Image (cartoon, rainbow, N blue to C red):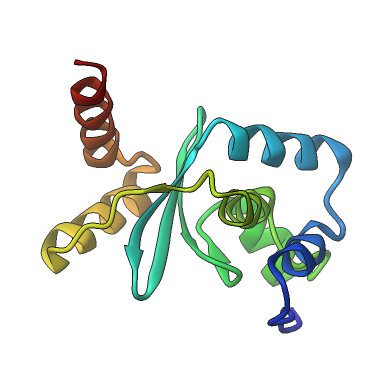
Length: 137
């Protein structure tokens, strides 16, 4: 796993997409459009990818808790990222990243732990539903 360039976000996104198939790139594009990535901490940056089959913890440009990242990025070194990390990059560069910073360290830790252990960010999903329903009123 080589270090990613520190350049413009388009360059970083292009680097992250290297080795991804067309289907994975399309899934990343769709996820970015549908605002599936939620930034839960800004310093350090930590995000959650809300997927239909599971939710994943993302440390931007560095780590994703999905099996594909562990297998194909870390173990096999086939590429630099999974499509979840690529989708984060696209979301950030396009301004479609949903931001919901959690200030309480205990709540943040609990959310990350629950997502890692259960592959589902139930607490975050509830917060988003509450937040979105209050905007509609």
